[in-house]
Length: 274
Image (tube, rainbow, N blue to C red; front, side):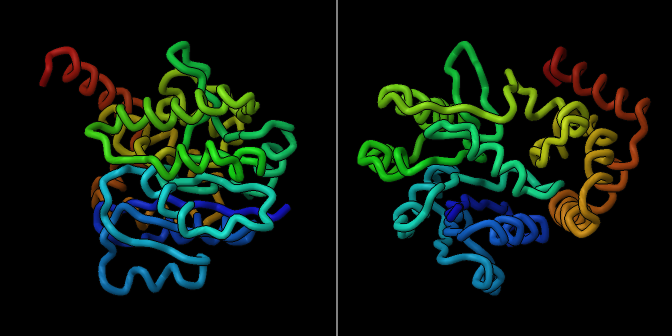
């Protein structure tokens, strides 16, 4: 199975952090990578990418991850590949060896597949941070027209509706089948950290580090304890860089009572508008 990963990268500090490097290394062991960023990288940062990717493009474009997918798709030579993946770094990991998950997805027998299918009544779709496409899709003119037509939109929610949900509608319009390894409703991918970790889910959404007032710390700590030590250390290093060592220590060391207190304050703030 010859795989190509179109990797959408973003970092608010313009740094290729330790967690992103570990993620890219894991993907590189399983296929080729073409990367595009929505970040102006600091001097010297792009050099970290050279050993890991076939090519890359680094510049602010304001089109979110689908804009990076578009740019990576334009760079890529698709000939000879059995699967093309759309992958972004809104997650950290993999916390477990990734190849078994790829093999399970690729064996689903569908034209498109992902780690997570959201069966939303507002629009069933694959979550766009990890989607695989067979040649029946990635070689189709209608898919190329869709992806190369991505443009800047005002809100991230509009991006999700037009492009994430829109990709599902496009697949359905062309009788292309799709499925996911996990079926998660609503915001379970963000909130159900503990349950997903127990089920062997291989990634953590980055938003778990700050979501609900930092109350997910105990679940995140347990998930990291199951990861390969080098991956866990890389994630901790990026937590320190982005949020500060003091926040990271407090976040990961929180016990159930402290985590509940954080969640209670978060809910109180939502209810009172503070």
